Length: 81
Image (cartoon, rainbow, N blue to C red; front, side, top):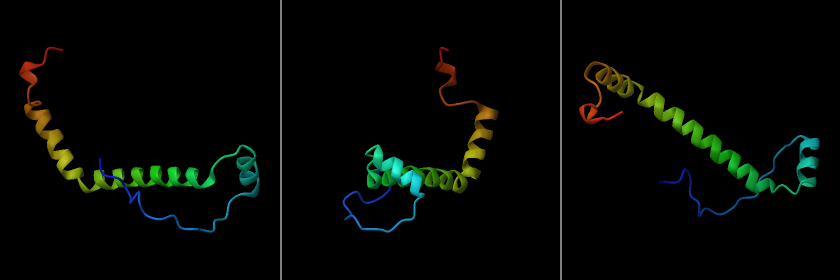
């Protein structure tokens, strides 16, 4: 599976604004802020890419669903369930 981004790209220092209480409690729990942010951004990027793909392909998906509704799925005659 192709990665959503270049895993080998160098890290880049970044300044962020974070709720001070959230930051304090996260540090108290030894949460790795960089790793947590990277995971959250990866998850968000994957979700947005998925939504974009579905939007770009909605006509083809609709056409396929209509075809299946009318003609059934390939291999239906062999299904045993």
